Image 1 (cartoon, helix red, strand yellow):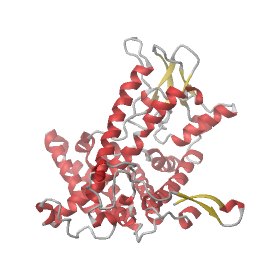
Image 2 (cartoon, one colour):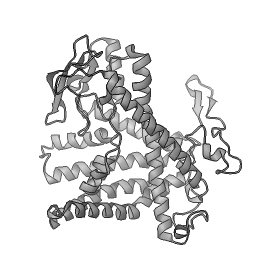
Image 3 (cartoon, helix red, strand yellow):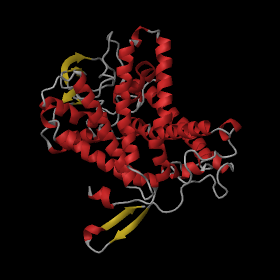
Image 4 (tube, rainbow, N blue to C red):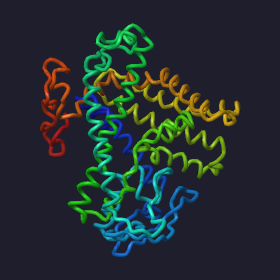
Amino acid sequence: MYTIHVVRFQCGANGYGNGLTTMWGVLWSATLLIFNDPQGTFQRVEKGPKALMINQSDSNSKGLAEPEKTSLNRQDAEDLVWQPCPKGFFHRLDWTLDLVTSFRGPGWNWRLPGLPKVPKSDNGTPLSASHLLQPMLTSYFRSFISIYMFIDLFKVIMIHDPYFWGMAPLSSPAPAYLPPFIVHSTVCTKIYRLTFSLCGVLCGLGFVLTLNPLFFGGIISRYFPSITRAPFNEPFLYPPQFGSPLDFLDRGLAGFWGKWWHQMFRFGISEPSRWLVQILHLNPRSTFARALQLLIAFTLTGFMHAAGSYTQFADTRPIRPFLFFIVQGLGILAQTAVTQAMGTRRLPRWLRRAGNGLFILVWAYYTGPLLADDFAKGGIWLLEPLPVSLLRGLGLGLPQEGFWCWHGKWFRWWNRGRWWERGFAVI
């Protein structure tokens, strides 16, 4: 709480990350230390001695996987085994570091629903781990390059719009360089700005998250394989961060947030409500328990993003991102109740998908400004993630911009006198 109340960054995006990550750290610590017993119940997949024996798992009632031994034959592969909390110090340190940084748990027995299980050979054909890994790394590298180019394009377009500088309201006139149907329509201007805000978030998350498989799967597993017992050369550790559009077309707003959107925080925001349902002796499948878990999860998400808004220098309104996530939970409950009352399952699939897609677009149009305006006012879009910009180097950016984008200082020495008040400060 001291960090959220006192610490600030000059960069808008860094300031947002300060509050969000601090709040997430509190929630994640409570998830691991209060709502669960990692030392007694958690297990992760590790590299074992020789012939590959892996415990394939199914989820039990608490959401943990019960190990079931399954043989696998892979060329050039090591054993994979389920490892509970080890006794040796360095082994336990490795195990614990993996636990506290594995938010979705793809290699753990508590992994999120929908993530791929630890694979096994169906017909006994030998499979090489490196053979499975390389196509995945190639795909992620292509995605990284594509996202890089999209960010460059979005930055060039957004940098000429005062809204994305936090200097104009959402309803202000659009820049003249945009097509006339956007410039002369308040509705189209709002849709354009909300769409670019969503695309900016998607590209920003994708830019960072695609580095995970490229670094751990492409570098660590190849050049430093002995640094950890985690099998970084296994593709199941790197599932996609986002789902398919069919997830929200088939399931509406619930599918948007529960399946399609990234699930980085899902375990942390769902475990407090699971624990509460358990101690209250509620039926976890009952309508009341599910609604309670849903609203608690979105409330916690709202607090995290409100903390990010609060720790920025700009004149933001933390209550707006908090309300944005609250109304998402209420929207899911409302849509679920209406579709069940109308019996929409009897309708053709194409009509249900069209209805879900239309509902999400209208819902985003009216609720999106709660979050998008706060992002813009806080200076999120002023962050420069790219070191080199082809488009700005060609003269499409601001007059003083060129190919190289990283300027100024990122760190400086901080000295307030006492030894614990000295160190490098992030600017």
